[in-house]
Image 1 (cartoon, rainbow, N blue to C red):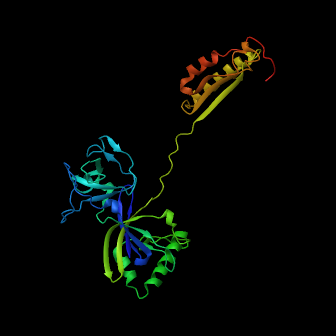
Image 2 (image 1 turned 135 degrees about the horizontal axis):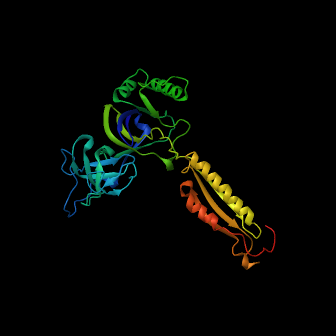
Image 3 (image 1 turned 90 degrees about the vertical axis):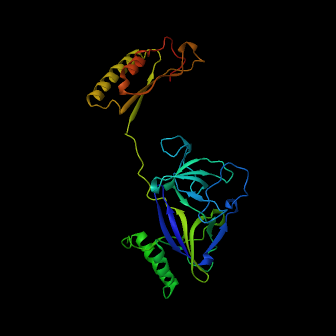
Length: 330
């Protein structure tokens, strides 16, 4: 049987999950086993009471490594991959303000400092993955140890688990009001088993064995939480004047200048200078057929907001009709 600790960007929450032992496979991560001692200046901190096992931590989402034990120091590695594992070489401070000096291995090479509240102690070196779903229920994840134990000690644990799952689904689907005290936080997907090539690893934090062949495991999973609302910048409008500057279009170009001045005046009256921008493009015809045309198209001004009125009007003033006729109509 299991418990789970949800790791969030800002905090961690200890939770427990009910699992029969056959629902999970324990995996010893050999890459995390203590390495043979090498000639080195520094060693990671030892687990209390151990002579050869080093302290390790597992990283929460959105954690970063810093050059010094301060967020104002330089960032060594930004947004470390969640569930990354580091050895602890030093600790500084207490409680939520503690910092950890960490490295990726035991060879004495430290990488930087990690905020203590962005990592969880992980000394088990064990993880779990789901086994095949044949002949078993989906796994339930419980909020606390007592709720897990009560379910395991029920007259019919299987019936109790089915009841909890049914109520959980009813609350999640809106058929029942959500109960903040409800013991189940999540469950393994119901529709089908997790594909073996897309398995989900759950690091183990604590193991108890209340009865023969039954284990309670506290594991970690990443809780995405509520998606923060997307920050949408202030709406801005861009208007591009595309003007025919072939011969004989001079009067129309001048009329455009007058219209632009009127628009600018209205925008300034309404205080919208930073909300609207203007661009200016002139077009003529093929320069291969008539080189004297000078250009096929030309950007006289990129989009500039109305606070740059003078620069835009200068670009518009520089626009002239062609001095030669084109070889065809556009």
